Image (tube, rainbow, N blue to C red; front, side, top):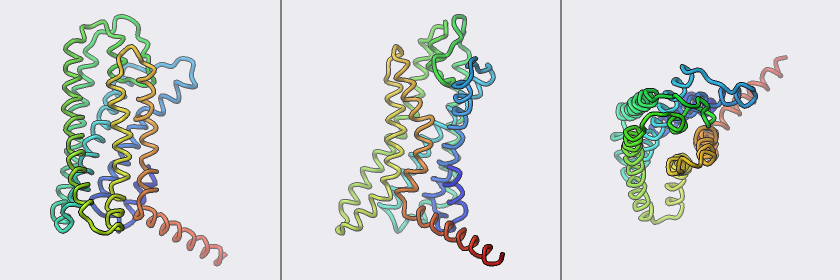
Length: 276
């Protein structure tokens, strides 16, 4: 993740809207996995396996912030690919630096609002029974399971939030790719179609893994917490590690940038050895 961010910032050829979004995606992956992984590893090796109340609040707030932001950012990236393939001549005009910054800022804003609502709603619950969270991080569903409050309103609000977050982003992604597929199929040359699809395959891979895990998790009944843990593990730890690999291995520009950096390093090492 650090490597992807460094490559994008150092190579002038990657100074495009697509890589601007990708750099922000790498930043989000880095931070939301960092919210979960260190404490999870400490608890795995520790006997106490505890977390403070303030730590739990912070973990839930930051995780909700970054996961919702990533969903909206992936929708923005789908829109970017739609403009690039369906309106290539207007791409530089429509996907201006200002619009890109607004889309990223809007993603963070939606993530922040959602996080505030989820966190405040979760920690207004009463926890008068067991305080043992059957999960490897503080998520609102495991916290609801140990609450003795009436969860009817909380579950309705949670369902509403999931609907206004997941459905719009999925709709943007699906509609964008419907237009993309329609446009690509009109390209006569096989090489042209292959090149157009290759620019989208990485994004589709990331979307499939993330949304597949999230939808699977939230459709699992509360009586199956182990399945919920598997799905959570996928989108909290596995997905952030896979994203840089998916984008770097499937992207010619990134591989070319890596080659340039390695070539410079080799030349620098050779010059140092020659001088000494």
